Amino acid sequence: MPVLIMKIKITNPTDLIAQLKYDYQPFKLISTTLTKTIITDENEYYHSANMGLKPVELNLIKSVKDYILKNNITCNVTRKNIQYINRGILRNGTYKNNLYEIDLKSAYWNFAYKDNHISKDIFDRGNNDYMVSKKARLIALGNLAKRKTIIDFNGKSFSKALFETSEETENIFYSASAKTDAVMNRLKLIAGEGYLFYWCDAIFVRSLEAKNEIERYLNRYFLNYATINIDKIEKTNSYIKVWDKGHKEPRPFLFESIKPVDLTKVID
Image (cartoon, rainbow, N blue to C red; front, side):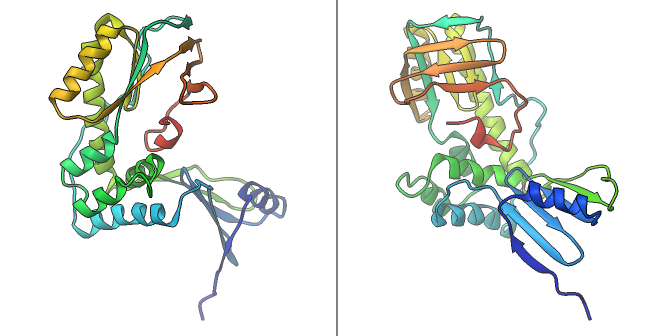
């Protein structure tokens, strides 16, 4: 008779791992950006990061992946050229005059729909700003490229990490990323000497002329955007901070290694 393994939700996987190691108890650890699963001979423990998502948002995330798998939707994309962020040539210091942020609205989501990678119903549900946050839309697409890290502990030492990708769905996310990045690179060229940097789907410039030229381009190609007046930008070797009236605290843009599918950490 097979052993019945209990599934138990936990709040602190780090403490459990430490205890299992102390007891020399073998286990398997499966990690993603937002989850951890720890499997022993007796139990399966799981932990999900608290992303503050509503049930309707969790349902949207599931609907996106289910739709793509059910309809066998695939595409080809070259990932190596996707930058996600570009620091530009911004020198260390503080900038205060004629600063603007032009933020593409739901860029990833819109490209996924234009390429018929999500249905009209899913697209409309995701665009309901009263029910669904920008973060939820990003997770719904980033989840398609989720990568699992698998490590075994034999009671004494850890095995070499193995990585399991989402081969069936990941290119859908990378396709939307590549098309968004192509737009940002075009906007960078349009901004010319007024260009400062871009971060996923937002570009920062330091001249009224650069702002106007970018807006003209986006209007011409029916790309939705929002323009924000920036009060101050501070640049150091490790980060950029941005001040504007819409945020109580300055927004930090860190130059650490970016995981492409973890967009919720790099897009505000």
